[in-house]
Image 1: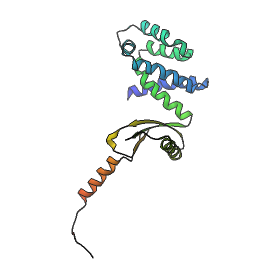
Image 2 (image 1 turned 135 degrees about the vertical axis):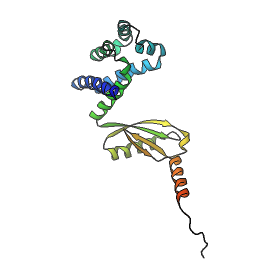
Image 3 (image 1 turned 30 degrees about the horizontal axis):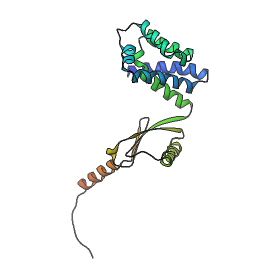
Amino acid sequence: MLANQLALKYAQAIYEVAADKNLLSEVEEQLTTVEQAIREHEDLATLFYHPRVPAVAKKETISKLFKQELADFVHNFLLLLVDKRREAALPAIVSEYRKLANEARNMAEAEVITAMPLTEQEHAALVRKLSTVTGKNMVLKTQIDESILGGVIVKIGDKLIDGSVVRQLRMLKTKLLTTEVTKIGVTN
C-alpha cells in the first residue's frame, strides 16, 4: 500500500509537469521506453535496481542511454528517482502515470482475454461496446488463453466481466449439482 502511494505521488508530480507542457502522450512514451528497456535487459535491470550500485553510475548510465530520447524534465525526473533511491518504484510510477494520463484523455485500458485472437471486426466491435458502456475511449490489451475455451474476459480497472465458456460451464455444473430432483416422469 505504501509503495503504491509513493508511486502515485511521483507519478502525479511528473504528470503535472507533462500536463502543463501539453506533453502527456510524449512523456508516457518516454517513461514506457525507459521502463521497458530496463525490464528487457537483465544487466541494465541489475545495474539500475541493485542497491549497492552507486547513484553516480546509475545516473551516468541513464544519461548515456536515454538523454537524447527524453525531454529534459523527464531525464531530470529519472535522476531524481536515483538520488532519492526510488528507482525500484519506476514500473509502478509508469503504471500510475499511464492511469492519470488516460483519465485526462478520457481513455481507459481494458485487459481482454480470449481463447483465440480477435479479428479486426471483433476488436473494433468490442472497443465500441466498451466505449459505450464506460463513456471512455477504450484501449484494449489483448491476451490469448486457450484454457477459457471461448468467450471473452474483460478487466477494466477493478471491474471484471467474465463471459468465458469455462465460467459458464462451471455455473451450469453448479446449478445441476445443487438442483434437487424430486420426481422424474414421462408425460405424453
